[in-house]
Amino acid sequence: MKRLAVCVLIVLLACSFAFAAGGSEQKAGVKEIVIGVFEPLTGENGGGGYQEVLGMRYANQVYPTVKINGETYNVRLVEADNKSDKTEAVTAAQSLISAGASVVLGSYGSGVSIAAGDIFADNKIPAIGASCTNPQVTLGNDYYFRVCFLDPFQGTVMANYAWQEGAKKAAVITQLGDDYSSGLGNFFSKAYTALGGKVVSEQRFQTNTTDFKSILTNIKAENPDVIFAPSSIATAPLIIKQARELGITAKIMAGDTWENSSIIENAGASAEGVVLSTFFDDADPATAEAAKFIKGFKPFLVANKQPEIIPAVSALGYDAYITALKAIEMANSTKGADIRNALVKVEVEGVTGRIVFDVNGDADKNMAFIKVVQNGQFKFLKTVSIK
Image (cartoon, rainbow, N blue to C red; front, side, top):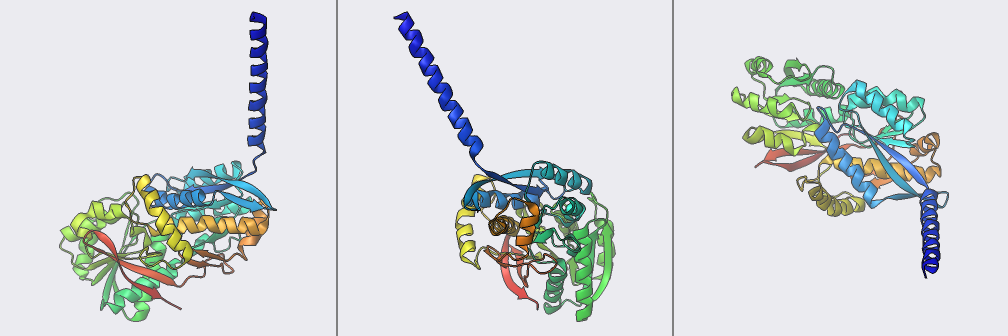
C-alpha cells in the first residue's frame, strides 16, 4: 500500500509539474506591446498629471488589446514619473526606452515634454502628448504629436473673451522658466493688444513662490479689468486668495491647467468667478466615443477616490491612448518608426472630437470650452472657435 501511495504521489507531482510548465509556456507565448506613460505623478504638476494618467489607465481597461498582422497583442502600460522636472524628465524618458516602449503618451506640462523630445526622436519612438500645449513641443520634432489645441489658439481665445466682456486693461502673471506659463501669457498679451486692449502690468515669479502679495500690489496699482495668470495647480489658489485678500476685484482668468477641483478646494470662496479655457465638457459629448467614455469613466473616477467630475486632461489622456492604438493597427508593427509613419495618416473620432495631425504633428482643432467657477463648481459658459 505504501509503495502504491508513493507511485500515485509521483504521478500526481509529475502531472502538476506538466500542468505548471504548460501554463508558463502559454503565458510566455502571449504577445505583448508596451506603451510608455510619461507623466508627472509628483512635483508641482503631480495633480494634473495623475488626472491625465487616469484617462490612459481607463482607456487601457476599455481597450486592453490591439491587432497586429491578425494577431492579438496585450497592451501593457509602463509608467515613468517625470516629477514635473526637466532633468528628471530625461531620466524618465530614458527609462521608458529601456522598458521597450513602442510608443509613449504624455506629458502633462510642456516644459518636461520639450526636455524629453530629443530622447524619443533619437530612439525613433513616437510620443503623443495629451495636454502639452506649447508650440515648441512638436516644432522640429518628427516624433512628437499631440491631441490638444495649442497655446497660440488658447491665448487668443482668452484674449477674445476678455475683450468681448468689456475688459480694456489687463495684467499678466507668468512663471519664470515654465514654458507653458510664459508661452501662454505671451500669446494672450499679443492677441489682447491686437484687439485694442492694453496690458498695464506684466509680472513674473520664480518656481516655488508662495507669497505673491508684492506683484499683486503692483498690479492693484494699475487697476486692471482682468488678470490673466496661467500657472500650475499648486500656485493658482495662492494667487487667487492673495489677490482677493488685497481687495483686487478684477476678473481672474487662466488656461487649461486651472480646471482642477483642488484649486477650488484650496482657494475656497475666493475662486468664485474665475474663468478658464479647456478642451472638453462632459455635458456636451461631441462623439459616440465621448458618450461611452462619460458613462464609464465617472464610476472609474469614484473607484479611484476622485470627484465625479471629468477633467478635460483625462479625456485627452484617453484620446492619446486610442490614437496610439489606431496607429499601431495601421502600422501592423511594434516598431516605433513604423508607428510614427502611421500617425501621420491616422484619423480618430475621439472623446474630444476628430483627431488628425498637421505637418507639425499637431491636432487640427479650433474649438475651446470656456468655464467659470460658480457655487464651488466649474460651470460651462460657451464654446469659442477661431479660424
